[in-house]
Image (tube, rainbow, N blue to C red; front, side):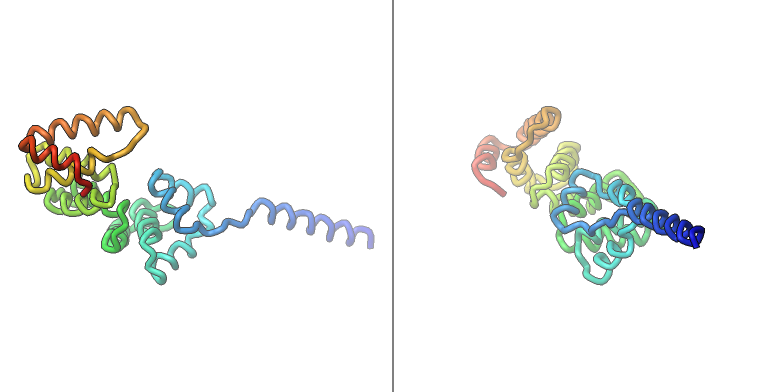
Length: 204
């Protein structure tokens, strides 16, 4: 009887230890996930959470069609994080998030078209997506778009709007501040002075 009691006690203690090791992970709320995406920590967080949220993430991406979760699910598929890698399907969900106007998805899709990540380089499509992201105050998109404009791509009619966006951009990063300043200088050289002055006053 004593041996049976000790065996049961060991089993209970072992089960308790396993339960403590498998901590319950709460699904991210939308604001939390967007913060992770902006800091490029969304994939690493899924790994840190030991891939426990894969089914919840999939459901929110596919059934609920939440753009932040479509973006996360697309990235997980494209890079094979916690699930089987499927680049084509991953890009599909990134595009779905971009189509819903998620600035981070618009920026990423535009960047991929620019550098040829997972797809062929297409500058026209890159500018299309980056312009949409830039108009939503995505600074990464604004700076990349400025690089493209200053390399001779895009329409001069679009220069004032981007100049205005960068002129009113806020950052405490000295390197980013220098990039903004350099981009503004280069863009200003491509426009008449009165257009530059107007762009500084207006917010596009």
